[in-house]
Image 1 (tube, rainbow, N blue to C red):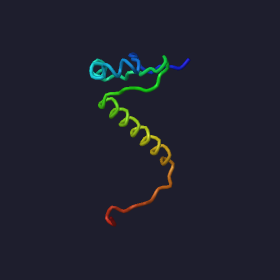
Image 2: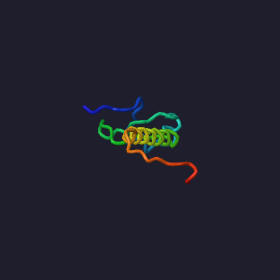
Image 3: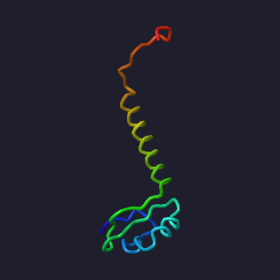
Image 4: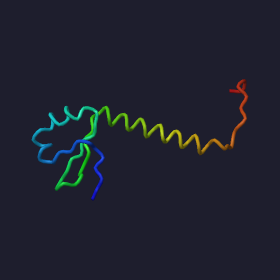
Length: 81
């Protein structure tokens, strides 16, 4: 059995019939779109999607900082810049 990563679920048919209502009811939460009772897709508001992208960028930055924290370092004199 697949895990559903949303509190609200809708069928593909229901989504086709009531897209606007489902999107407004979802607010800032994901909605699992089910096809034959299995998650086929997730519907996200634009704001929620943008938050996810921001979090991914933050995680990538953290990983990069950790990878580079051990050096090598370059000595720079501010007066030479």
